[in-house]
Image (cartoon, rainbow, N blue to C red):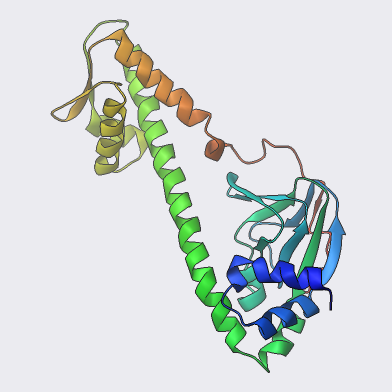
Length: 247
């Protein structure tokens, strides 16, 4: 058995609860495959049955056009499709030449017959990983909401034609932005804490040009954050899933 690949599997977070024998089995059944930079290995919502472990190189992941970071040696993707045939929850595209260890569902099912505990170990660690992913998604959505509130406040401030102070009704902002009023109030409080106005009754009060400037800064910061990248702005991928998936 390849000791390097066995050691690689040993480092993977989702397999960290497995026994030494189970790790050796995973390493044994994996098929090593080379893919070039710019290759889409897994496409969001596509069907699939394999899990991919990065042996060398790097891949970026996106969900709904939003950047979810990059993966390097010892990291993996596609475990939900491996375990239950679920559609891909994210797109993974190589950003440099990459070598993968492909764990196919049919061969994985064979070892399940002898050692079903490996599945429970994987599910336990996957639960922790999914919670972290969900937290990051909520953070991105919160940032997007704050950016929408800032944009609407800037729009209303510019309509005042320079007259100060400007009182912004948060109920109208919520209606315009399509958000719940409580969410708008939270976002307005965060903007006020950054010096972009003062909370006053049911609104946000802009008393100076400096406050309007900080409001505009908050808008620009949100618009330029990595998580706000629109789908399709990074260019077309070279190929979709060139690996012969066992689906």
